Image (cartoon, rainbow, N blue to C red; front, side, top):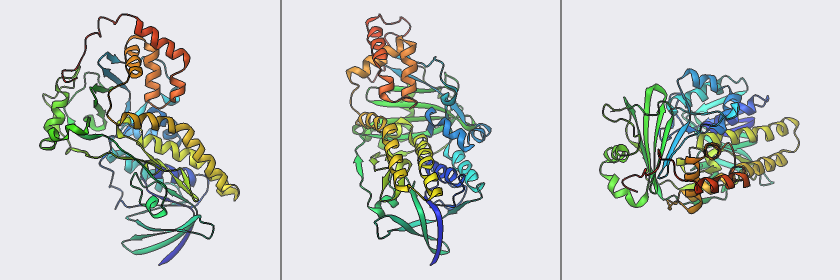
Length: 421
């Protein structure tokens, strides 16, 4: 078994792992990134990849933005329908969070690997399966082992980063405390050709009773239909998932035109969407992306939060590794920042994933957002994860919400209601 040594080893080369490895390598650190995917053409297939606008700053920092634009990724925005009407964002946003991206992982993942291989101090090893994590005499994890087609490899590092997904084999090996979050919806989706949206390149979201439907424009002139449906309805989907998916959208307001649509992928999705929470730092490990916090995919935060967390971690931990001082304090600061920025979002996302009925406050917000463009803009900023809940529900916004609910409904939006609601 060969022995190697690096400043950092990153386990996983998805959005969080790739961003971690790139940003640490750019500080001059020697970085090894390992991933189970067999080669550069492999990609994660089950991912809806609506990257929220909160991730735009780190996308630009990575040098990924121009590559996404050149590859035809869609600069995303959305209109949201509830029983009260359409919620559109017509407010002026900040340039650095003006949009996110809708892009297939078939396109995104190779672009991330391309950025990784361009870093001179970054070594990428694909086809590598993590087999062991070993702590030193202080209980800090500093060594790991993995296997490849060429045999086993043992590596030591000043810092190990786990970015290996919601199942996180690394977290299991290290016995990182894990909280399982029950999710009471399943998800299925497919890409289509020749299915134009009535909103052009703007995505559409529908709240259909306790279920959600999404229609996204994608690179390659594709449209994705995606539904998140409460668990008790699974029997109606089991026999013909494509038929159930297409039927879900047929009688929605401003639904996409399916008349000439041609499926461009198999039906993809997950029957069970259980989510997980783990500490962002544990016994010297740094956890990034879904390995730390995996949320309901309906919120579209997985890729974006992973890259944002990687940026926070690299900004804290990188300088400490370079100086040889304060590494544990840097990890603690990263964990604190992760919790401060994302714990509120995780709470609301987890609460919604129960598939419960909309509560009174949510109905008041939805009705107000249809009637008041300022409320609509602020709601879109929150849903896009640009602002936190306490920045959205300020006293001023609450007053606007209440005032809007006291006004008569606009004639153009009143009475919209889905047949299944």
